[in-house]
Length: 290
Image 1 (tube, rainbow, N blue to C red):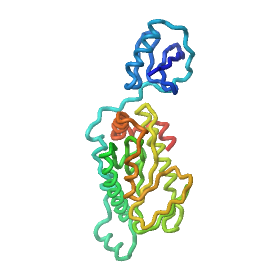
Image 2: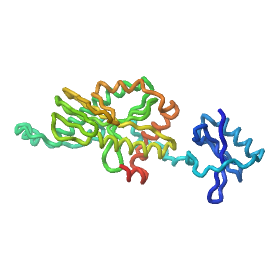
Image 3: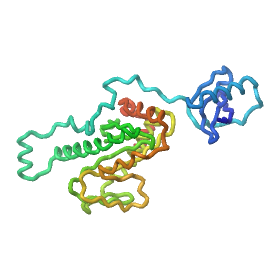
Image 4: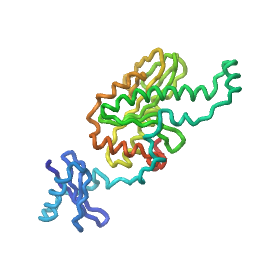
Protein backbone atom coordinates (compact mmCIF):
# COMPACT_ATOMS: atom_id res chain seq x y z
CA UNK A 1 0.00 0.00 0.00
CA UNK A 2 1.50 3.34 -1.08
CA UNK A 3 0.92 5.99 1.55
CA UNK A 4 1.29 9.74 1.07
CA UNK A 5 2.99 11.77 3.81
CA UNK A 6 1.88 15.28 4.74
CA UNK A 7 3.19 17.69 7.36
CA UNK A 8 0.99 19.35 9.99
CA UNK A 9 2.04 22.27 12.21
CA UNK A 10 -0.09 24.01 14.81
CA UNK A 11 0.29 25.51 18.30
CA UNK A 12 3.99 24.61 18.40
CA UNK A 13 3.42 20.97 17.46
CA UNK A 14 4.67 19.33 14.28
CA UNK A 15 3.55 15.98 12.91
CA UNK A 16 3.92 13.85 9.80
CA UNK A 17 0.69 12.16 8.74
CA UNK A 18 0.57 8.96 6.65
CA UNK A 19 -2.52 9.11 4.43
CA UNK A 20 -4.38 6.76 2.12
CA UNK A 21 -4.82 7.88 -1.51
CA UNK A 22 -8.22 9.35 -0.60
CA UNK A 23 -6.62 11.56 2.08
CA UNK A 24 -7.70 9.54 5.14
CA UNK A 25 -4.99 9.55 7.83
CA UNK A 26 -3.97 6.08 9.04
CA UNK A 27 -1.06 7.12 11.27
CA UNK A 28 1.12 10.00 12.42
CA UNK A 29 4.56 10.71 13.85
CA UNK A 30 5.65 13.36 16.32
CA UNK A 31 8.54 15.09 14.53
CA UNK A 32 10.18 16.21 17.80
CA UNK A 33 10.06 12.89 19.66
CA UNK A 34 9.90 10.43 16.77
CA UNK A 35 6.98 8.58 18.37
CA UNK A 36 4.64 6.96 15.82
CA UNK A 37 0.89 6.46 16.41
CA UNK A 38 -1.00 3.97 14.23
CA UNK A 39 -4.66 4.90 13.65
CA UNK A 40 -5.66 1.91 11.49
CA UNK A 41 -4.27 -1.46 12.56
CA UNK A 42 -4.57 -2.99 9.09
CA UNK A 43 -1.94 -0.52 7.77
CA UNK A 44 0.40 -0.78 10.77
CA UNK A 45 3.51 -2.06 8.93
CA UNK A 46 3.15 0.42 6.05
CA UNK A 47 2.60 3.34 8.44
CA UNK A 48 5.67 2.54 10.52
CA UNK A 49 7.85 2.00 7.44
CA UNK A 50 6.94 5.21 5.61
CA UNK A 51 7.04 7.47 8.67
CA UNK A 52 10.31 5.96 9.95
CA UNK A 53 11.85 6.58 6.55
CA UNK A 54 10.77 10.24 6.53
CA UNK A 55 11.96 10.80 10.09
CA UNK A 56 15.33 9.12 9.50
CA UNK A 57 16.21 10.70 6.19
CA UNK A 58 14.86 14.18 7.01
CA UNK A 59 13.40 14.71 3.53
CA UNK A 60 12.50 18.03 1.99
CA UNK A 61 9.50 19.61 3.75
CA UNK A 62 6.28 18.03 2.55
CA UNK A 63 3.19 20.17 1.89
CA UNK A 64 1.43 21.18 5.11
CA UNK A 65 -1.92 19.69 5.98
CA UNK A 66 -3.98 22.21 7.90
CA UNK A 67 -6.67 19.86 9.15
CA UNK A 68 -5.97 16.09 9.38
CA UNK A 69 -8.85 13.99 8.09
CA UNK A 70 -8.69 11.66 11.09
CA UNK A 71 -8.75 12.96 14.69
CA UNK A 72 -6.64 11.59 17.49
CA UNK A 73 -7.67 8.48 19.40
CA UNK A 74 -11.37 8.54 20.40
CA UNK A 75 -12.35 8.62 24.09
CA UNK A 76 -12.36 5.33 25.96
CA UNK A 77 -15.36 3.88 27.74
CA UNK A 78 -14.86 2.37 31.21
CA UNK A 79 -14.47 -1.42 31.43
CA UNK A 80 -17.73 -3.16 30.58
CA UNK A 81 -19.61 -4.54 33.58
CA UNK A 82 -22.61 -6.86 33.67
CA UNK A 83 -24.80 -3.93 34.73
CA UNK A 84 -23.74 -1.89 31.69
CA UNK A 85 -23.87 -4.74 29.14
CA UNK A 86 -26.89 -4.14 26.89
CA UNK A 87 -26.38 -7.41 25.01
CA UNK A 88 -28.43 -9.07 27.75
CA UNK A 89 -31.48 -6.88 26.96
CA UNK A 90 -34.50 -8.72 25.60
CA UNK A 91 -36.71 -7.25 22.87
CA UNK A 92 -39.01 -4.74 24.56
CA UNK A 93 -36.86 -4.67 27.71
CA UNK A 94 -37.90 -1.11 28.53
CA UNK A 95 -41.58 -2.14 28.45
CA UNK A 96 -41.22 -5.29 30.54
CA UNK A 97 -40.70 -3.31 33.75
CA UNK A 98 -43.73 -1.07 33.32
CA UNK A 99 -46.49 -1.69 35.83
CA UNK A 100 -49.97 -1.69 34.37
CA UNK A 101 -53.32 -0.98 36.01
CA UNK A 102 -54.77 -3.37 38.58
CA UNK A 103 -57.12 -6.19 37.64
CA UNK A 104 -60.25 -4.22 38.58
CA UNK A 105 -59.28 -1.28 36.35
CA UNK A 106 -58.47 -3.60 33.47
CA UNK A 107 -61.85 -5.32 33.75
CA UNK A 108 -63.71 -2.01 33.85
CA UNK A 109 -61.77 -0.71 30.84
CA UNK A 110 -62.55 -3.88 28.90
CA UNK A 111 -66.25 -3.70 29.74
CA UNK A 112 -66.37 -0.07 28.64
CA UNK A 113 -64.13 -0.82 25.64
CA UNK A 114 -61.96 2.01 26.77
CA UNK A 115 -58.28 1.77 25.68
CA UNK A 116 -55.64 2.33 28.35
CA UNK A 117 -51.96 3.20 28.33
CA UNK A 118 -51.29 -0.40 29.34
CA UNK A 119 -52.91 -1.62 26.12
CA UNK A 120 -50.46 0.53 24.16
CA UNK A 121 -47.49 -0.83 26.13
CA UNK A 122 -48.67 -4.41 25.67
CA UNK A 123 -49.03 -3.98 21.90
CA UNK A 124 -45.66 -2.28 21.69
CA UNK A 125 -44.02 -5.11 23.62
CA UNK A 126 -45.57 -7.76 21.37
CA UNK A 127 -44.38 -5.89 18.29
CA UNK A 128 -40.81 -5.54 19.54
CA UNK A 129 -40.69 -9.22 20.49
CA UNK A 130 -41.82 -10.32 17.04
CA UNK A 131 -39.33 -8.08 15.26
CA UNK A 132 -36.57 -9.11 17.67
CA UNK A 133 -37.14 -12.77 16.80
CA UNK A 134 -36.81 -11.98 13.09
CA UNK A 135 -33.62 -9.97 13.62
CA UNK A 136 -31.93 -12.79 15.53
CA UNK A 137 -32.24 -14.94 12.42
CA UNK A 138 -29.69 -12.62 10.79
CA UNK A 139 -26.95 -13.46 13.31
CA UNK A 140 -25.87 -16.49 11.29
CA UNK A 141 -25.07 -14.08 8.44
CA UNK A 142 -22.54 -12.12 10.54
CA UNK A 143 -24.89 -9.56 12.07
CA UNK A 144 -25.07 -8.41 15.70
CA UNK A 145 -28.35 -7.45 17.35
CA UNK A 146 -29.12 -5.27 20.37
CA UNK A 147 -32.48 -4.32 21.86
CA UNK A 148 -33.91 -1.45 23.93
CA UNK A 149 -30.93 0.91 23.79
CA UNK A 150 -31.57 3.57 26.49
CA UNK A 151 -30.77 7.13 25.47
CA UNK A 152 -30.03 10.03 27.77
CA UNK A 153 -33.55 11.48 27.84
CA UNK A 154 -35.57 8.40 28.95
CA UNK A 155 -36.36 7.17 25.44
CA UNK A 156 -34.90 4.13 23.76
CA UNK A 157 -33.96 2.68 20.38
CA UNK A 158 -36.09 -0.43 19.82
CA UNK A 159 -33.35 -2.41 18.03
CA UNK A 160 -29.86 -1.92 16.58
CA UNK A 161 -28.64 -4.22 13.82
CA UNK A 162 -24.87 -4.09 13.25
CA UNK A 163 -23.13 -5.94 10.45
CA UNK A 164 -21.30 -5.89 7.12
CA UNK A 165 -24.01 -3.70 5.58
CA UNK A 166 -23.64 -1.01 8.27
CA UNK A 167 -25.82 -0.13 11.27
CA UNK A 168 -29.60 -0.05 11.16
CA UNK A 169 -31.61 1.85 13.77
CA UNK A 170 -34.94 0.01 13.86
CA UNK A 171 -38.21 1.47 15.08
CA UNK A 172 -41.10 -0.96 15.53
CA UNK A 173 -44.74 0.06 15.05
CA UNK A 174 -47.49 -2.42 15.91
CA UNK A 175 -50.77 -1.66 14.10
CA UNK A 176 -52.74 -4.88 14.33
CA UNK A 177 -55.14 -5.40 11.41
CA UNK A 178 -54.63 -1.85 10.20
CA UNK A 179 -53.65 -0.51 6.76
CA UNK A 180 -50.54 1.69 6.60
CA UNK A 181 -49.64 4.21 3.89
CA UNK A 182 -46.09 5.58 3.70
CA UNK A 183 -45.20 8.74 1.74
CA UNK A 184 -41.93 10.65 1.47
CA UNK A 185 -42.29 12.30 4.86
CA UNK A 186 -45.57 11.08 6.31
CA UNK A 187 -47.20 7.87 7.48
CA UNK A 188 -50.95 7.34 7.78
CA UNK A 189 -52.75 4.49 9.51
CA UNK A 190 -56.18 3.66 8.06
CA UNK A 191 -56.12 7.02 6.19
CA UNK A 192 -55.94 8.84 9.52
CA UNK A 193 -53.85 11.77 10.67
CA UNK A 194 -50.26 11.92 9.42
CA UNK A 195 -47.74 10.51 11.91
CA UNK A 196 -44.10 11.73 12.12
CA UNK A 197 -42.63 8.21 12.10
CA UNK A 198 -40.18 8.86 9.25
CA UNK A 199 -38.88 12.15 10.64
CA UNK A 200 -38.33 10.67 14.10
CA UNK A 201 -36.60 7.61 12.64
CA UNK A 202 -34.17 9.81 10.71
CA UNK A 203 -33.40 11.88 13.81
CA UNK A 204 -32.85 8.71 15.83
CA UNK A 205 -30.43 7.29 13.24
CA UNK A 206 -28.41 10.53 13.21
CA UNK A 207 -28.20 10.47 16.97
CA UNK A 208 -27.03 6.84 16.94
CA UNK A 209 -24.37 7.65 14.33
CA UNK A 210 -22.99 10.60 16.36
CA UNK A 211 -22.61 8.48 19.49
CA UNK A 212 -21.00 5.53 17.71
CA UNK A 213 -18.61 7.74 15.74
CA UNK A 214 -17.68 9.65 18.90
CA UNK A 215 -16.39 6.47 20.55
CA UNK A 216 -15.23 4.53 17.46
CA UNK A 217 -13.26 7.35 15.83
CA UNK A 218 -14.39 6.51 12.30
CA UNK A 219 -17.47 7.05 10.14
CA UNK A 220 -20.34 4.71 11.02
CA UNK A 221 -23.16 4.53 8.44
CA UNK A 222 -26.51 4.32 10.24
CA UNK A 223 -29.74 3.80 8.29
CA UNK A 224 -33.19 4.35 9.86
CA UNK A 225 -35.69 1.51 9.49
CA UNK A 226 -39.42 1.39 10.18
CA UNK A 227 -40.89 -2.08 10.73
CA UNK A 228 -44.68 -2.44 10.82
CA UNK A 229 -46.12 -5.40 12.71
CA UNK A 230 -49.50 -7.05 12.18
CA UNK A 231 -50.70 -4.73 9.41
CA UNK A 232 -53.16 -5.93 6.78
CA UNK A 233 -51.65 -3.71 4.08
CA UNK A 234 -48.42 -1.73 3.74
CA UNK A 235 -48.44 0.70 0.82
CA UNK A 236 -45.11 2.52 0.31
CA UNK A 237 -45.51 5.25 -2.31
CA UNK A 238 -42.46 7.32 -1.33
CA UNK A 239 -39.96 8.23 -4.05
CA UNK A 240 -37.32 10.03 -1.95
CA UNK A 241 -37.76 8.29 1.39
CA UNK A 242 -34.45 7.86 3.23
CA UNK A 243 -35.98 5.39 5.69
CA UNK A 244 -36.23 1.69 4.90
CA UNK A 245 -39.77 0.32 5.42
CA UNK A 246 -40.65 -3.34 6.04
CA UNK A 247 -43.19 -5.69 7.51
CA UNK A 248 -41.71 -7.77 10.32
CA UNK A 249 -41.09 -10.82 8.08
CA UNK A 250 -39.30 -8.70 5.49
CA UNK A 251 -36.31 -7.65 7.64
CA UNK A 252 -34.49 -10.71 6.28
CA UNK A 253 -33.85 -8.53 3.22
CA UNK A 254 -31.07 -6.86 5.23
CA UNK A 255 -29.07 -10.10 5.61
CA UNK A 256 -27.12 -10.03 2.29
CA UNK A 257 -26.11 -6.35 2.56
CA UNK A 258 -22.34 -5.83 2.77
CA UNK A 259 -19.48 -3.48 1.99
CA UNK A 260 -20.07 -0.88 4.71
CA UNK A 261 -18.11 -2.34 7.67
CA UNK A 262 -15.31 -4.88 7.88
CA UNK A 263 -15.66 -7.76 10.34
CA UNK A 264 -13.17 -6.01 12.65
CA UNK A 265 -15.17 -2.78 12.60
CA UNK A 266 -18.44 -4.63 13.14
CA UNK A 267 -17.03 -5.91 16.42
CA UNK A 268 -15.66 -2.48 17.33
CA UNK A 269 -19.02 -0.80 16.75
CA UNK A 270 -20.81 -3.59 18.62
CA UNK A 271 -18.48 -3.24 21.62
CA UNK A 272 -19.39 0.47 21.85
CA UNK A 273 -23.11 -0.01 21.17
CA UNK A 274 -23.52 -2.66 23.87
CA UNK A 275 -22.03 -0.35 26.55
CA UNK A 276 -24.79 1.46 28.43
CA UNK A 277 -22.54 4.39 29.32
CA UNK A 278 -21.96 5.21 25.66
CA UNK A 279 -25.65 6.14 25.48
CA UNK A 280 -26.34 7.56 28.93
CA UNK A 281 -23.29 9.83 28.77
CA UNK A 282 -24.08 11.24 25.35
CA UNK A 283 -21.53 13.78 24.07
CA UNK A 284 -22.87 17.38 23.98
CA UNK A 285 -22.85 17.52 20.16
CA UNK A 286 -25.08 14.44 20.02
CA UNK A 287 -27.53 15.92 22.51
CA UNK A 288 -27.86 19.18 20.56
CA UNK A 289 -28.58 17.34 17.34
CA UNK A 290 -31.16 14.91 18.68
